[in-house]
Length: 242
Image (cartoon, rainbow, N blue to C red; front, top):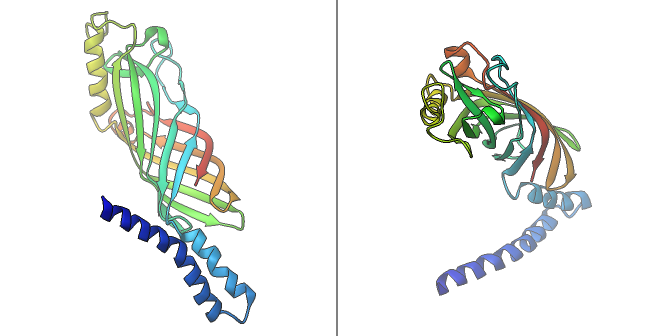
């Protein structure tokens, strides 16, 4: 424990002293101009950490092309997304992001469909993990980003509050419907998605950028196996990079 404390103390002192030594070295090598003397400090501050933490607040829609007589119209969703952009300030980067929201489902004609609250069987915990490549265009105060890459839609249906396991269901009971819903989510590659999006970030401070973002999550597995866009996600909101 004492050894760890000494290491932390040495590391802290090094962090404070290193900028002083680097500034002296820069001043000696670029003494002819004031601009050359100041420029390295900006770059060191900018690149001191090679990544950005990302947060997105983006309401959207969960596309349901089935009849609203037996299921809900395409419901509004409110995902919260967190991720990481690496490396920052690069033309090409990667940006793993995970989004979370909840939605209700029922089982009808061997399909898991969005449900209104009075007809729901499961409350579905929904996690969308995307790992897109990011192409960035940097201007003086703005950054335009275009993203594209694979996504994995992880959905876990649990019996909704107030729904009994023995209540009636399409397969015989609500409990067996819940099992069928979860099986449907994970079969025939319905979990495989393609994510594409775009954003415009404005530099608010040297370490904070924010702006509008739009994303599309396309159910590649569902399009192949079911020939339908069931579960496609479209969202738009605010993106923050720190």
